[in-house]
Length: 132
Image (cartoon, rainbow, N blue to C red):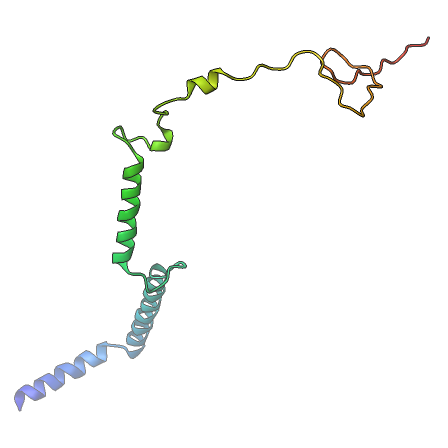
């Protein structure tokens, strides 16, 4: 019984030093901090147009397939096949190009050449006369 009386006395002494307003303001501050913490967690956990039902194993499979495709495109030195020089260049086709036409070609039928032409076969520019 004496232990209960001393505990009761200590508790009453402690209650006189503790102000209810201080406890309420501390609780309000804690609630505000929890709200801010929840907002931060929601912001960090937000998904940006990523569906919720994505299977990570499926994504890893696609990544492995892309890596395999890139590995097949590259040859021994790590340069993709489309950047590699041709194995057998067709030099004959490149060297046997037709020659560029020279001179004036024949005038197509039905087209009368009523304008004068310059040395390139283009219509000659008219010359302005200077009168003084």
